[in-house]
Length: 269
Image (cartoon, one colour):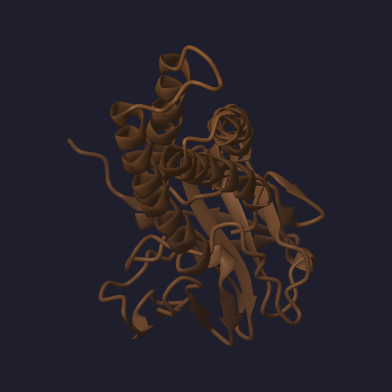
């Protein structure tokens, strides 16, 4: 889903992550070469690169946290992957902070402890980068999925399901809107047979169906391509195995009212 921390639809997080990655890896390389050549200037370059990399890392973390809290779908594989990605980055920054504190001056020769910890931190940084790439290219977090006839991504937050989700005129055929009430996320869309509503949660890996494509009466998940019938919830094409929840839709005076499946469950005696 499109990033909330963005500038004209361009996510800020990937703009900033190149700085700490380059600076921290550069710090490690400068220390290795400086150790091999006994060059104080390279040790100083390593020290200042580490300080700048730590600052840049915290700056890059801010838009990343915004997207993790506001964009990544709950109960999805991306939610756990994003948490691991961020946690590993925190460990990398903590390691470089320890290294910077451990040095008494910028031109001090790095010792085995510092080089070893720095090497481990760089390896962990690589693993974290791999996870970040998976979030972007597989889970498509921060990707703008505007397609033909979709227009601008539509989203609305309501205080209760007693209020109308939208007006019929807001959606043309093939368009969808994400409607949220608390932690509940429901997609309202218009297919050739009229207005429909269904869970935003793909049953495969939790991908956001609201960010997918509605073609005819079939919605396709943007993450792995699972397709579902929006009237029955049945799986049209995998890899998903289980159907999605569909909601009751009622149109009154042009206003679309949605009743999620959870609201239809009988109360326990």
